[in-house]
Image 1 (cartoon, rainbow, N blue to C red):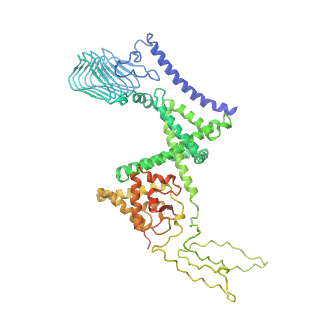
Image 2: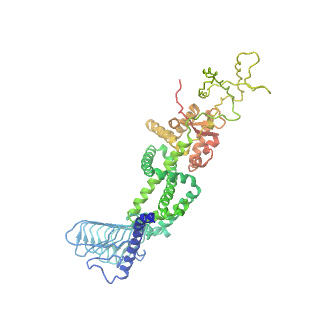
Image 3: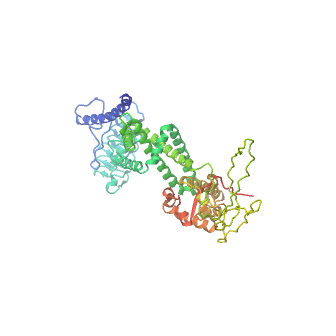
Amino acid sequence: MKRTRKFLPLFSVLLGSWLWTHNALAQDNAAESNAAEPMVAEVHDSHSAPLESTNEPAPNHDLVPIIAKSFHGHSQPIVLFWQNAELKADDTAETVVVIGGSAVIRGKVKEAVVSIGGNVEVDGEVGQSAVAVLGNVKLTPKAHVHEDTVAVMGSIEADSGAKVRGNTVAVGGKLNVADGAQIGGDKVNVGLPGPLGNFDWLRNWIKYCLFEFRPLAFQVGFVWVIAAIYLLLYLLVALGFSRPVATCVEHLKTRAATMFLFGLLAKLVVTFLYLILFVTGVGVILIPVIGMAVTVFTILGKVAILEWIGGKLGKHFGDRFQTPLPAFLLGAAVLTLLYVIPLVGGLTALLFGVWGLGVGVVYVFGGLRRETPGNMNPPSTPGAAFTATPTPPPAAPAPFAGGEPATAEVAPPLIDPAPQFAPAPEAGARPNATPPGAGTAPLNEPKPAPKTSAFPVMPGLSSLPKAALWERILAALLDIILIAIVVNLARLQSWSLLIALAYFSGMWAWRGTSIGGVVLKLRVVRSDDRRLTFIVALVRGLAAAFSVVVLLLGYLWIAWDKDKQGWHDKIAGTFVVRQPQATPLVML
């Protein structure tokens, strides 16, 4: 009961915000239905007298009632946000700019009239142009526009008697000019066919979502469809990847603030990488790969955050909200309520995206640390190409006076880079048996390896841990930046693809890695543990180009392949592995 009382204030705020939103909408509708009783005599209610247009439906009403302003006195510029403006018949203004509202001009405007996200009605004189973006323009019989009249994603209606000295242009809407209207310039109508010519959805989104800085609004229907699609995607991730999500939730319980800081850092790093790739030009092909990886990490982190929030809030209502699915649904409901609130919804969306990226990045790096053992000696596998002679144990030390032998830990021997080959023991004989009468066991004579191939075998490399997708992307990014610098300095942009192919093929054949691979301790190895030849490296480079051309699907294949191979790896028969130490480029 005490926990429930602690949690009540938060739900009271959310519920109050939601009720306030619906109450404001109800008041707005009631004000329109009771238009015969104006609230203030000097206030012009734009809802009671909407702009007439035979081609566009009447605009939707505001969530919060907007009071239009009337301006009297001296000439001055008028700039309004999220309000309607009316210039009285006897008033003069320098210029009128309205963002998120409509403008009605009955007096004189010396310069231009501009409305963004609203309509423009001219019933007086405009010294320059009348422009409506995402809105309609209506010219009454008293209208006089000295220059152009423009409607972008809207329509223009000019009544008989209206005067326009310049051009009349309607883009994305209809142009209706009465017979008695005087148009001095050209009449231009750039319309779009079918449903593309109706921009009401875009106007409503700009007005109720963009201008009010929130992702969701009751007046905009398509944003709820998008939100439902995202919710379904998050639900599939929560059900299909329950173990990674649970790991992220455990991290959130101990270091939630640290993950948010990681998200901020990752945003800065990704933005810087995008800028470098875009400027150099050569690495533009990696931008979609990085973007997709960032999206995957962010979605995983967002799902974990929703479960974490739902679990923390649900503990006040019992144990049923501590399981993953109910906790996820409760967290999604709370997030939806926050998204509807103006300003709060936009800030919540920004913080949610940064936080989700931080959670995903921490999970990836945490998984990398778990996969990297402290000592990464190549394990011996059955059927290896050689049998190393075991090092004989040291002689037993002399016993103490009490008769107990002294014991000492012996460090395991390091892997001999040139091991001795021992012949297989005969049947019934013990290995390394000492012949009768001999004081010490003779050394085994080395047995030459079978000459099955002209290329030496490099045992154990293919069994090293496989490199993840993000490591390979980062290594390739470093290489492409280096190639881009060289290409731009040498002014060989037309040869950039051939230079990149020669660089990667040559580096793989020479050292088994590239400069980016040296930095990240990566190496390209063959699946049969033999040396990577130039022919194999060239085939891998050409196949890598194919992996890029097919919408990067060949590279993204690494993310879900069990051996972490891309298409080019499967074609060339190679792996990319992590080494305990970087491969030096020069060995004297």
